[in-house]
Length: 128
Image (cartoon, rainbow, N blue to C red; front, side, top):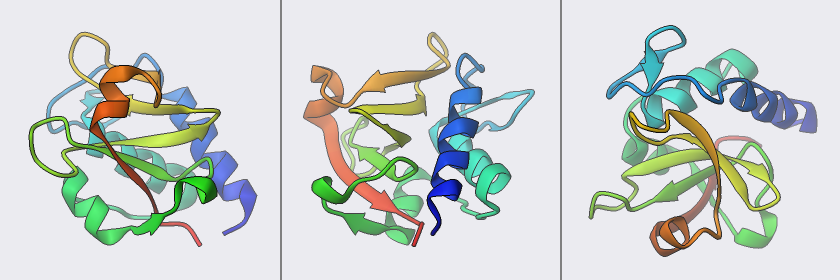
């Protein structure tokens, strides 16, 4: 996929910063959960329909070795004691954007932050 698609995904994800969190949320005006944010950003910025939970997204995407990870790829975490229970969008420079919880809403975080580093399960992509 052209780098412009990746850039569009990153720009769109960044535009969602500070949006509200809603469990099961998939819409701009009502808020997002982690998978809802990813599906919204991918559809709106790249025309890629991706549905389901973080786990479903992990199954649909292909594994990317860390040294090949690029902005626009997905990052997965085990946050609920089950594999691939959280997803975000990698934006480069050790950062990702995700819908975290009701307190923080959509936010940017460092992958190297201890909480996330301990739960990190890898990069995956739906992009060519």
